[in-house]
Image (cartoon, rainbow, N blue to C red; front, side, top):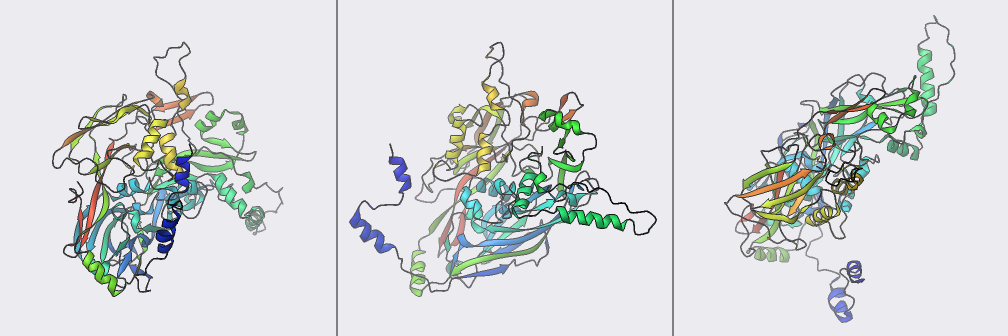
Length: 626
């Protein structure tokens, strides 16, 4: 019964065979050093343009340095600082946050993964263009990094923005926090932040480690930058208050003194007598609301999100405390104490046109030299090509959008080249490229050339069987821990799932199950996709997918919504609510989301050799591997 646990606990431990352990394990703990004690990090500025350079242009950067014989690609990274201006679609009125003395209302603006700044990628070896071009780099980088382990993303500051860090107001994210008070009066706000992009955060370089650049040539990468993948959200005010409280930031007395100075300044002309008023209670960080009805997940920049738009005196709306919670959410006002009302409304945040610039851009190249003996050995070894595995994502957009009954004829005819996975993605807006929520469907299944994946349809898109399939398809079903936001995206329904198991009061089991639609989930759940695995897993790098050459086959997806009408969170993702003091009314806008997308991941490969240098192969299978 404990074999699997013991195996996992002692993986790599072979102390059972004592003689073998001493002769083969302990004797090889210290490896022979082929280096020449010249390890170094070298910083290289971007080559063809001097900062500040406009965002949205192409630029080149070196991934290797001539001072190194061997480049450690897995240790290299790109370091950038970017700046741009953002503005809300509707102005926030002046003095809307006069009662928010400690700036508890702040928004986050940044990327889920810093590498999503790159929208197009190409490579050059000693100035010669490699046969590789990725024009879907944003989506490819998102698809790769969203399924990376939690510990990998936690240990890379300014490279990833985990929701658990953003929602807790942590500093090591690839973005910036901005107080909402800065936007008062319809102002645009300039934001600046740092990005760190490890070379291996790019899918095509994921397997690169040591690269002999002195032998095979220096690598340059050409990228086109874009702000398309920016996301934003309001940080829960309670989290900001907790951080300020931790640091002992009680600004009450300071604010009171500043108010007295300002009030005295209004009476310097002597025409009016100054009358000392009874001090007004000023909220401190201890008065932060435990819950405010804001959107608690990432939103793609350019799309709307529910935020706090003012913190004001209550002035006769004390009765808000007596309303049921759903009425409070519907009205957008939330009374947090006897003094203040926090008002929530939907706002859209966008980048001001032509305001983006890169103020600093450099690569940090790690590497070292090697002995002449090792150089000669490598020259001999590279007479035979070395195959370095890689992967590439291609994106296909369907022609059909969902109907009220879901998908019955969603299909596309395309050739497949070393396809290992097909992931169905469901944007709710044409702007969505790194934000995708659960479609809440049932009876989901993929047909690839009439073959079923899986053989039995998914009962729903959040149940135990579905989640297990997704974890296996992404190699996350073992000791590797998925991120919290990825798990919530595939296992947290957007409706009250418990209602699915209730029957109608008359016991009529033929009726569609009903579930109250949730507008506030409480955590980020914007990494949803349905990944259909086409190859065996846990086999390392093997070419085991589907390859049809130039022959096109039909790929078809089927599924239907679990809930209908205003409860269908995919077919009608935008629902406004109004409250007239007596009744909460939903405005069914019948919003149709854009057509779904099919992201195909294919095995590709690099070859390194003395004769041909560095080459990239995006089609076909290497000789001896089919």
